[in-house]
Image 1 (cartoon, rainbow, N blue to C red):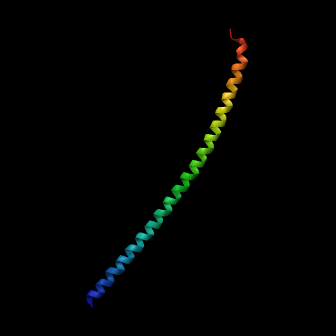
Image 2 (tube, rainbow, N blue to C red; image 1 turned 120 degrees about the horizontal axis):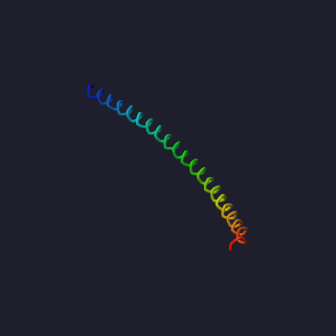
Length: 76
């Protein structure tokens, strides 16, 4: 009977350890999910900044071309 009680106690301890491990994994999965969401937001912001930078570069390129055209008559 003592052996049965010992086995039940071991099973109970193992079940508690499994439950704790599952809870820790759940927390870890939540943290990974939050990190992925943050990376997604950062990627979207970066994409918007790249588009803005490309538009600004295009505008500067056009302004430089206009300036070259306006200064051209003054070249010797």
